[in-house]
Amino acid sequence: MMNSENKIDQVFKLQKEEALKLRHSSKAQRIKKLEDLLRWINTNQEDIRKAIHADFKKPYTEIDISEIFVVTSEIKHAMKHLKGWMTPKKVSTPLTMLGSSSFIHYEPKGVSLIIAPWNYPFNLALGPLVSALSAGCTAIIKPSEMTPHTAALIRRLVEETFEPKHVAVFEGEIETAQYLLSKPFDHIFFTGSPAVGKIIMKAAAEHLSSVTLELGGKSPAIIDSRADLKDAAEKIVWGKFVNCGQTCIAPDYVLVQSDIKSDFLEALVQTLKSMYDTHGKGIEASKDYARLVNDKHLKRLQHLLSDASMKGANTYFGGQIHAAEKYFEPTILTNLTPDMEVMQEEIFGPILPVMEYQTLNEAITYINQNPKPLALYVFTKSSDVIDQVNSSTSSGATVANDCVLHFLQNELPFGGVNNSGMGKAHGQFGFLAFSNEKAVLKQRIGLTATKPLYPPYGITSKKITQLLLKWF
Image 1 (spheres, helix red, strand yellow):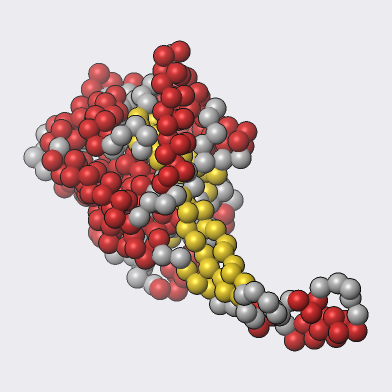
Image 2 (cartoon, helix red, strand yellow; image 1 turned 120 degrees about the vertical axis):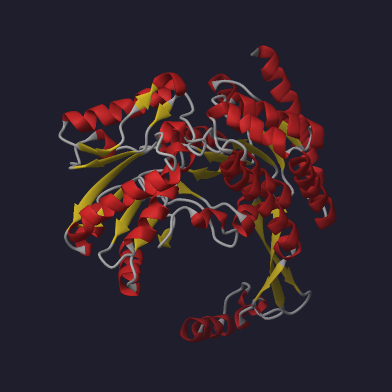
C-alpha cells in the first residue's frame, strides 16, 4: 500500500499543477480529449463486452445499451454543446448598478476524484469523466474492486488514452479509496449507497471539497387502475430485472391499485416468461438474464427473502437460487408489511415486492413516509394522476409510463434529493457539477450609480437611499 500511496501522491501533485494550466484550456483542447476517449471505446467494444460479461455475465446487448451507448452518446452530446456551455453568460444589470456589466464565467474546479460503483462499472466511471473533461478538470478514477475485469479495462483505457497529469486510475480495496479521500480534491463525484455517501461527505468536509453524490433508495412504481397493464408490466419487468435488478433507479417496489392487482400480477408473470423463458427451459437457461456480482450480494438478498417469508410474505413467482452460479431467479412477493427488511432497505436485486392501495392519496402518503427516492414511476392514462403524483411527492425524477429511461436523456438532470443524493449529472448539469460558476462584474471608471452613496453621508445619500427602498 505504501508504494500505492506514493504513486497517488505523485499523480495528485502532477494533476494539481496541470489543473492550473487547464483553467485556460480551449474548447478544441477539451474536445480533443473527448474524441480520444470516444475513439478508444469504439475501437475496443469487444474488449469492453468481454470484461463486463466476465464480472457478472451481463448479456452483450445489455452491455451495448447500458454501458457503451450511454457513454458514447454522452460524449457526442458534450462535443456538440460544449461551446455553448463554456461561453460566459451575460446577465441583466439593474438600474441601481447602471454603468456596470455582469457575467457568469465557467471555470474548471480543478482536480476531481471519481469513485465508481460495481453495478454499471464502465458507464458510471466514464460518464462522470466526460463531464470532468468537458469542464476542463483533471480526474482520478477509483473503479470498484468488485468488478476486477472492468476495473483493469478502465485502467488500460486511461493509460492508452491520457497522460497521468490529465487522467489516472487507481485500483484497490477500501484502503485505496480511504487514502484518496484524504487528499484535498476540488470535487468528488461518488456513485453508491447512502451509507457510503455519508462517509464520502465526511471525508470531503475535511477539505471542504464540493461533492456530487449519486446515491439510491427505494424507487416506487405506482400502477393506477387506468394503466395499460400489459404495457406497464413490460416496462416494470425490463426496468426491474435488467442487470439482474442491480440498478440504482430500478423500480424497488410496486404499489398497485387493489382492483387490478390480480390482473397486474398475472401480466408480470407472463411478461417474465416471454422475456426470459421463451423456450420453456427456465429463466436460468436464458442468456439474456445477468447474474449477481458476488456471493456476499447473493447472501444479502437471500436474507431479505427469508426475512420476508418468515414474517408472512408470499412468493408469488420465483425464489429459486443457484448459489454456485450466482443465479437468483426473478422473484415477485405479495402480502408485505412495513416491518419486513425487504420494505426497509434498497433491494438492489431481482426481488419485486408488490403492495396494494385503495386510493391514490394512500399510495402518496406511503411514499412520503419514507426517504425521498432517486426515481418515482407512475403508470396511468390519466394526466391528472400523473400531475398529482408529481406535485405531491419529492424524488430525483418522476417518470410517467416508463422506467429507467430518463437516465438516457442528456438534457435532463440526473440525481437524487437528500437520502438519494445531491448534485446533478449528465449533459450540461454534469459540466456544471465540475465547474465553478464564477461571478464577474465589470464597472466603468469614473462616475457610477453607487458613488453618491459613499461617505460622508448627507442629505443627498439619504434621499437616494429612500428612493431605493421605495422603488427598487
